Length: 436
Image (cartoon, rainbow, N blue to C red; front, side, top):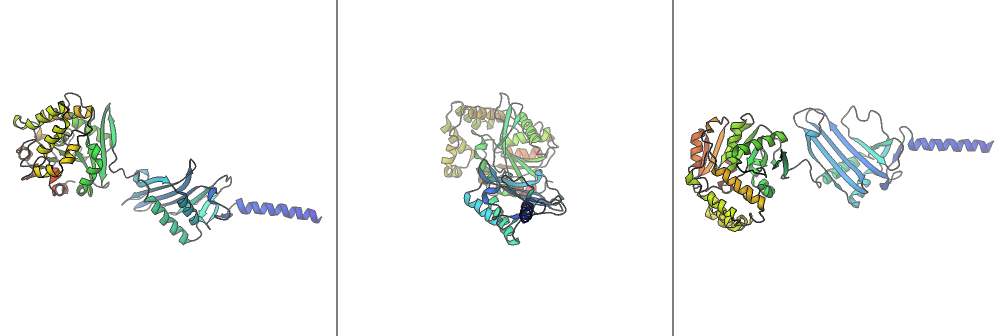
């Protein structure tokens, strides 16, 4: 009888232990019942759907035998939630070292895990924490830190890790492309995502400006403080007979593809010519123009420099071409100071680079917007130089007269004044403050 009673008690004890470890609302302890190797996934999530809604998630997990960390931040400034993926301001992941995983586990030690409650994701803003274990067939997964101090340390640890990942939501200077029915146009973005969109169109160059993305980002810091800036290249496949009208159409198609409109366009030299066509073609999409070292048409007297460039390009004489480019675009002082960099900028040019450069020169030399310039309806600001040897010293003045717009002409500067004048971006920013 005693043996039977002991057996019953033993069985009951086994049932009791099973319930205590795996039953409803029971809990086990990290570091005691759960080891570092047991953990396969851990989530920490916080969400506020009230005004200035926000969402934050940290995740520690296994992937292909490696320990990984992921973070995601979503924010809706001056609006209610929930914040969606479109509201992401930062996210990224990276592999953790053994030391970092150990530090993560130390912060979880002493914490408890129990069965997930049905209403744990409702009724408040969290945080919600879940821990998943290897070979865990139970519903035990809701985690609670040992104390408030451990939770605070954990959050600080996650913030530090997030600062060491590549922010995949921050695409600053990352070159992307749009396919336009067989034509490829490249661009990159930088600046203030919450600002008005400013599109920069570059001038003629032997090699794509996409090769200098990071340098451009650094050079346009003044405008980047206030504006969401996109720098677009021209299509790689420029057919014979390509025109500024075609350039404008391709740009507008690309803006539709990436859903960025309406925009302000800042066109430099050839870019200004394409920008004027875009403003006439789609006035609803172009809020304002900034025309830098540009012109409304090319006169025979102004073709000498470009004819020289075209001849040197056809001869594939890179050294003389870049020398002529530097001497005619910049002042002597600037050219001498940056001579080596200017000459080196043409190195490595391939056949496509040369063909596109020659086509771009033909586009400029055949350009004439004078008969349509009165159709531009948006605000325009013109910046030019009194000693422009590329498009002619009178180009900026003529634009201001034809457009009846504001502008500024730099004395003692040449075509490349956009690179030389220290107050260039400040003048543009002052004009754009009035553009709504």
